[in-house]
Image 1: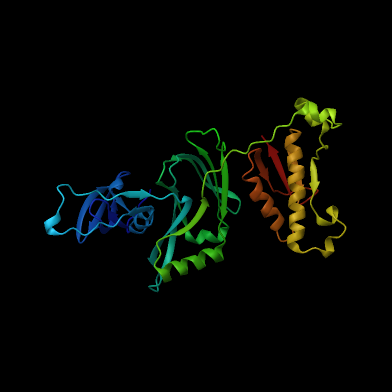
Image 2: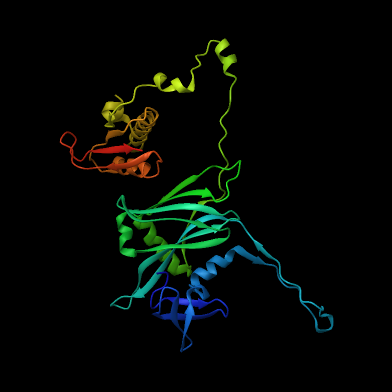
Length: 339
């Protein structure tokens, strides 16, 4: 349900502000505007702060001054220019007063905002602590917004992450077939943004997902017969697997297994080496059409495991993955199952 009792709203046709006092059904609510209660359809109202934000995409030219002796027969219509500004994920905090009369955030309303002319098909997934909380597949038109769902504000501490796979509703020859993007909220940063929002009287917390939908990546084509004549080895695509490095069913990412100079490395350098090794064996597993792969990441601080899990959530060849107790590795390994 998009609205709840107590939500502040604006009546679109009159720009009058009021409040929701009753949910009548899935299409209508009872609102109170300046002390008068009356029913309204949900598409006739909007959130006042969201309404102001979404209207920023429209720039109106200033009307020239018109004197009484120079009134035109027809009033000129102001030109409205829609300015493209990418695709955004927007969080609208809903405030309430606690027992001590302090203003606190109860929940976050989440919207997808499309400030481009293109229409997209999107596959949206939201997780808490790497566990699925909400999924939806739908379309969003050009210069439109789409209400996704709410999350309780207290769950910001559960590492909320968001991944969205976009595709053009009308495919274009030179544009990518799909484009994946993700966002992970850090509690400290969200709390800082809430305080900044209060101080500057801003309506929303916004994150830009991308500016322009990407072009298709064109692979360079080579004349193979010429390469073969110069001594290069050229293989048939159907035989490509037999010329790949053999895959592994178990990969150990402990840094001492990967390099002898690990004691001289920073934590960031160690993590980069481990993730590069993971990507290498993951790609080989996919190329060899393996059904599964076990990645030993250890327990430690959990940083490596979390990074690998975040990568796995957006990889298209992954059917599922699980981190459970194993008699050989304890909780220090993740098993990946491929499609």
